[in-house]
Image 1 (tube, protein in one colour):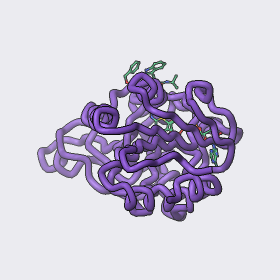
Image 2 (tube, rainbow, N blue to C red; image 1 turned 180 degrees about the horizontal axis):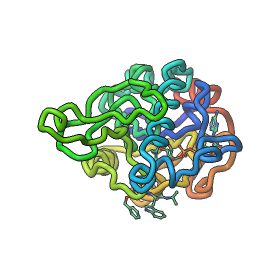
Image 3 (tube, rainbow, N blue to C red; image 1 turned 180 degrees about the vertical axis):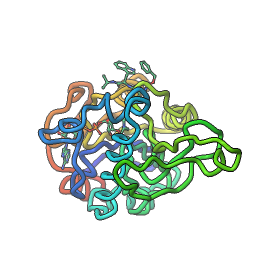
Length: 247
Ligand code: BV8
């Protein structure tokens, strides 16, 4: 089976942990997934960070150490090849924070939930910066700029935690792409490897349908929001994507 991509088709792809799972990165909600051993409210929320920043830094340092050993997989490469073929008729919005799409060569990319390999100051307005440091357990990294100004402020992972707003410019870029797609041609919305459990990413399919787009879901199991898609392709992303998106 192939996606129906015509010369006027614009493709918006939404990826979730099921794409990275093919690279060996644990998903969130599967049995034995990340949230099973690390309750989300304790390690992926501002409250959790305030209550126990050392636990949160240990959680993200563990994920940095793990993600660094993983390579992109055929699913990532298939999407990077689709971008090469479509150019500005392609946009990939990911919920994943592991940086594997970028490593696979994807450039037209929106990292909706942040990036594991970036940190920022929890207080000053220093821009987020590349940081792949795996901090020792109990180590609490401080902001160098605040330190120079004579006060200690914790660094935090550049991740969107639960209860935090997403970067409005990211959502605006995705909506602009969808709206221009329908005004200039046809929109095809493809979601891959996501349970559809997290808002506002999970609502993108509804916007795509409201705009008249054709919506596809590729997932290893029926996801929470599978019924909201016109087409459901049951399978593993690394196996399905290469043929699904091929010319
Ligand atoms: C916000 C960073 C304003 C952390 C993440 C409306 C209704 C209800 C709730 C809300 C709402 N609006 C806001 C909320 C609250 C909340 C939310 O959605 N809660 C849900 C859980 C009820 N949303 C927020 O807080 C967002 N902020 O909206 O601000 C606001 C705030 C409060 C109240 C109102 C408004 C911020 C959300 C961002 C949270 N941060 N990540 C980190 O990564 O450490 S989300 C986290 O979940 C990850 O980013 C992850 O990507 C994301 C989604 O999970 P999935 O990627 O889908 O992964 P999952 O494991 O769930 O599923 C994997 C799927 O793959 C499965 O279906 C599986 O079958 C499949 N699969 C597995 N292997 C394969 C495969 N498929 C194919 N091939 C395979 N090999």
